[in-house]
Image (cartoon, one colour):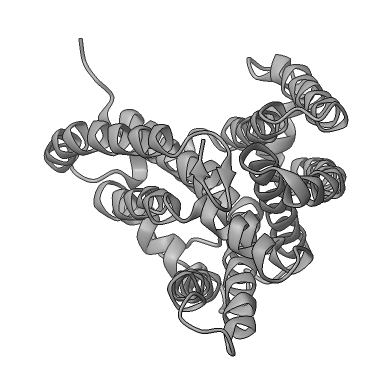
Length: 335
């Protein structure tokens, strides 16, 4: 049996990106809703819910970016020059957020500055991730296997819309995470925020979904022309609607786990929709995964390493979440 190494690696990169979005998405979301929590105990409790896992969540970002560089070097060489500004801003946002995790506990007088650094870093990281996604979806100008666009091609109304969509979506993940992990006033505040961000997320998804098919003919054909992907035109939106119903009924009934799982489902389904639109392109409508792939010897060598590292990452991630499962109590810890 012959393995399509480029296809396998595309699946691994897609998995790493999705894992990063759903895992780091909720802890970025906690930072995004920070200003709407009361100073002191509520903010401390919210930060403690993600403190044991936030840095491990970012492992998937490194795996996705490093994997892209190693196994799809042409895609990396085209995408990075096109998205330098939002990617650098995203990394700086992640740095500020990481520093805020450590320093806000070291001071009382300057704590408000680190609270704003935590929020600001989370906002910049989330918004820039959405901008990068929008710029990729709308298309990157390629000429002679190199980026041929300008410095500001990434800045468009559509990329601003996708930046907003990802930001409010992360806010929803953060709010439902707090619903699952906390009790008392933080829980009640998170429920209210989850309702608002849930409506905003669904509205953003609808807006992006209506515009995307008209950006490129390929997208229009994938979703509306007669093709093997046509059934997904009905299935994916129906599943998103079902997830939305589970989200809002779970919040209304005071359930703790269902809203978070429903919010994750919305993100996973949206990611699947993007994959249907893109495939087999890694740089949409310009470069396929096979065009961008490294030599077969490199794909084999890196796949061996990935086969060892990815199970280890999955095991220690699962173990961390298992150890810190359940509700967090401000006095007694997890129970």
